[in-house]
Length: 405
Image (tube, one colour):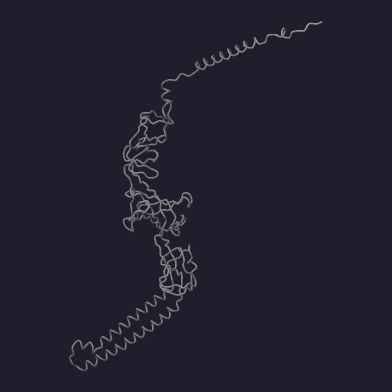
């Protein structure tokens, strides 16, 4: 009989070789790492003191400034309002028998253009009656003048002296005065009748745009009744509010014939890009705005609808809010900087001999774009225009074109 074979007795011992192999691989990796680190340190460039100073200097952009005469701008918001506005009222009563096509909201009418016509029949009859009464009064006057001449002749034939009082009575002077008064009254009544007839034709008092119409063909109107609303087209106003602190920088017109400060108007959401209108600062209204407690000013715009000299410019719309850039009084011997270049606490960063200098400045005026520096900067100073990561007086600076130093 064959003996059973013990498999465990003939299986080789494989567990002893595994740990040795792992140790060997780890040792090789560590040796390779040590060799690489040594190589890196061996080949690293040596930094000199000069290169280190250039590397740590902050890169800046600068702008050279100069002192001079500059004109600031005061920017405000204003509303377009009519400079001349009228509500047409009927001077006489009657039926509207004619209406002009131009008498429609939005249409423009010339000065003297007929807008409405009221039935003139009653006023023509009244005129004819007054003419007749005038002729009668003139005839009565002629008769009285003849009677006065006869009385004078009779008085002269008597050849007697009569007191002055009796003289006036004998010569019929009171009767002559009455006749003259009746003629004057008849002439006045005739003129009134002529006026009433002329007023049956309602005309535009000036070049205007029709904003509203309250009657139409066939309407019965009475004296004093409103017929419509017109605004003049020669000028509009922009009524703006200005902070009280900025009033002293504005130059108003000394009289109606002299121009005030120049103004540029912008209607950013309506007009094409870059389109503006020029105007003049006219008047300070002697009342504060009730809500904002700011001063009210009037800006005059000629030819607001661009019908004449301003042809090609965008028209103004009544009631619209526009942005107005008012030219202020000139400032002499100041430096003009962009507003963002004036840093915290009214300081400016300046490059002096490649080092940072922090200057305290006195601001004469600020508008929406610029600050006008009265003191603290001189012509030729190089103002730093970019932001810096650290702001320390005396820090080293460099420009883009600087070479190795």
